[in-house]
Image (cartoon, helix red, strand yellow):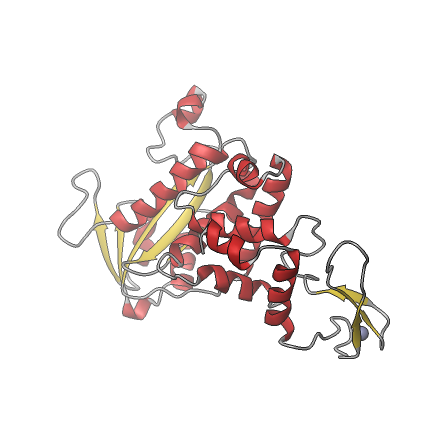
Amino acid sequence: MNLIEVMERFPDQESCIEHLERIRWGNKPVCLHCGCVEVKEKKEDGVGRVGRYHCSACKASFKVTCGTVFHGTKIPLQKWFLAISLILNAKKSLSSCQLARDLDLNQKTAWYIQTRIRAEMANKTNPIVLQGIIEADETYIGGKPRKENKKEDRKPAKRGRGTSKTAVIGAVERGGQVVAEVAKGLTGRDIMQFIRRVVNVKESELMTDEYHAYNALSGQLKHHVINHQEQYVDGDKHTNTIEGFWSLLKRAWYGQHHHYSVGYTPLYVAERCYVYNNRNLETIFWKFLNGSMKV
Ligand SMILES: [Zn+2]
């Protein structure tokens, strides 16, 4: 769904509410507090449909958005839908400043919407198990762009090990999905636990660089080490896929997100994984909305 399609399909608040109601309830609204179907919609004059219902059994009131990513929002749902479309279509992620300009919101509001959508992506991702040829690697993001770093941040630590940036570990199945997350640590044990959780080790081969912590895995699955001091590609032995993912992740971060706290790195990583893993799915917009109504 591009922006034009979203605008055509959802021209107003009412069409958005109706769509969400159909996903969540089908034809008949159900009380979100007690499950009763004896509910009545409360009409509010002069403002169009608000979609607030009253339950005659438990006397509570509710809307279709209760408990969802849209809970309690005063921002028109159409803007939310447009934001979802923009975020899903952005190859290199979108800054909240850009989102604010695109949707005529202030930057804080855009940032709030973006953070909620990211959290939704993180929550609605089912555990993924990779299988086949797997490339694993780690990287560091966060902090300011490299050129602005203080000298001590830049020194040795070839790939950022030992800096104050956030360590991210990832594994990608060639031609398939990626799993990446903020790493608690990067010892052999940490890496082994991560790989055993996200990879079917019995049916997979692992490609990594020469970082010694990966050696902990060597007894558990077929493991090819590409020594980057010597060469980057040896036939089909390389880690180019995961490095391609890192470069997408980092370019967007340094280009657009460097003024935000590293505390949000996990959500940012989750967004990039979600978009990457659904890159070939044309119905991703609808999948996101459907998922958002599963509470
Ligand atoms: Zn009720």
